Structure formats: C-alpha cells, structure tokens
Image 1 (cartoon, one colour):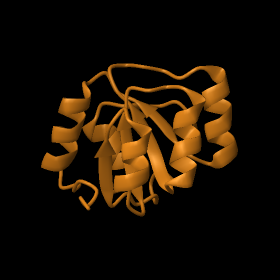
Image 2 (cartoon, helix red, strand yellow; image 1 turned 90 degrees about the vertical axis):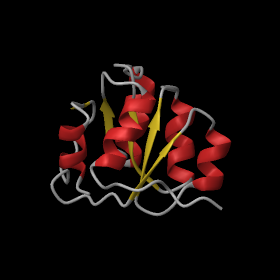
Image 3 (tube, helix red, strand yellow; image 1 turned 180 degrees about the horizontal axis):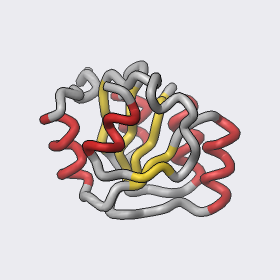
Length: 117
C-alpha cells in the first residue's frame, strides 16, 4: 500500500515532508508502544503505529528499518523528534484516531500485520 493511500485511509496529516509518498510502498504494519516489540516483530517496509513521540521511537525505527511512523490520537512529536526523523529520512504522520481504529482501518484496507514470530 502506498504511503499517500495510508494517509488518506487514516485521515492523517504529514508532520514531515514525504517527497516519495506516492511511491513509498508499505507492506505491513506494527502497532505498539513497546519498542522492544518493534525490534522483535518488525519486517521490511513496515509502518509503525504508536502513541509514543520521543526521539527514541525514531532511533528504534531506524534500527528496525521501519519506513514510516504514524502517531495516534492526534499526538505530535517535539521538535527534536521531528528533526531526527528528517535526518533519518523517516516520514511522520499524525491521525486523530486511536491505535485500535488505525490498525483496523489499515487491515480492512488490505495492509497486513507484521509477521508474528
């Protein structure tokens, strides 16, 4: 699923510019606030759905090769987190919906969960 399509499904806005939003292909999603879960259950071309907005989320996403992060419940990260995401080339989005709703919307739209190990 393309990132631009994901943003539309989630009523999300881009916090950072995603110049390749039309072309960036996301193949699965992971919903969690536990960064240890991200490191264990991630997959290539994965989207992270979280309520955490600290810079550590960006660092974890980089290690796990997460392609994009969606912040739930209208949360917006601080400037330090945004700058780090820009530096690492990780697009950030924010949606007004809950983590549960976001997961359901993406699953209904055809985006699978990251594989369970």
